[in-house]
Image (tube, rainbow, N blue to C red; front, side, top):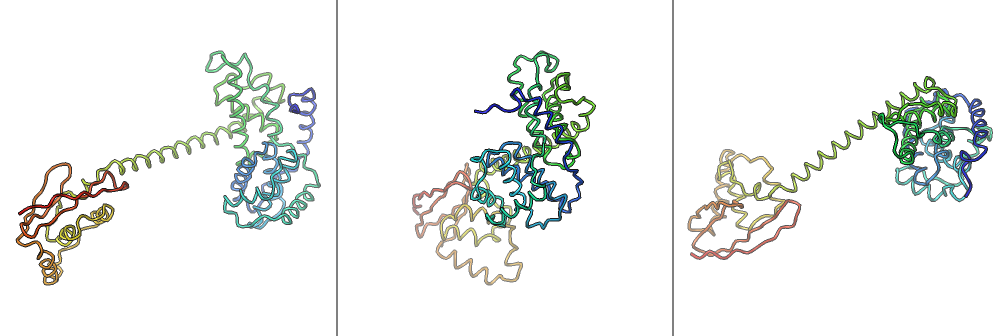
Length: 390
């Protein structure tokens, strides 16, 4: 396996070459008319590169190519997604090995997850790649912060550093967390085009400085880091402050989302744990005549389904039919429904965990079917009760 350049004997020379090349980078003016879609496209490329398991340098180069192209040309909105994918392909071909370059079918399958309307074709992508290469004069050797971060992480933690004022017991473990934080801030730098106003090497050094602050490692910037990066703390202060502001926003949004999720879980638990019989069979506060049809229908076609009964219990009580002038129709239906329950039915209230109303008559004999359930979302079970003898 090839050794990474930042661990080789030529690491210092390669770093110096990258620093010279970044001085010749094109000037970014942020004049794109589609600047409002820039954050969405950057996130899209970040997700696609993660799904394709591309290296951070390919991801950053793809976003940088997209920024430069949008800054120079007015692109139709429907073509922005195609250009973004073409930038990702070019960056992966330049930074990755041949077997790691995403295939067209793989990109189309991922694009469908984001509901991207245009289906990518090989012809369109080749045409867009040629357009991009001509725009950059066939020069894709453009340093990004991702090209420096691993080199700077070599000196990110030392044995003389302190954590909360105490010596570090395990430098190896701290370096693992340092690497995670640094790559997190590296992704933060992709979200806002304002970081393009700094040199890529400065952004990479600021990622290390912001990580040391978050991990509460002191001093915030060491002499070894200053010698390696050629940046003092004063050079990095502005960029680090911007990264920490973005970090605080992410923490607040994550806390807000977690609180919303917790509230939703509490509401669902309260609904599941609620006993259905306490709602379905509690004594009515209204006059029985206003609900005689619903009451008798329960005996006419035993107990209604739990969901239907729950829906009916949530509806506002209807005004009395007598008050609406439909006394004759209402009384007729009442006498018809109650004919089979002669002699006059008696209403008995059974006290207990389940409260319901049962009509008992001497003739004819009727059997009741009782329904029990533990929740509105669980299955109910019917049990036949014994017949009442006169």
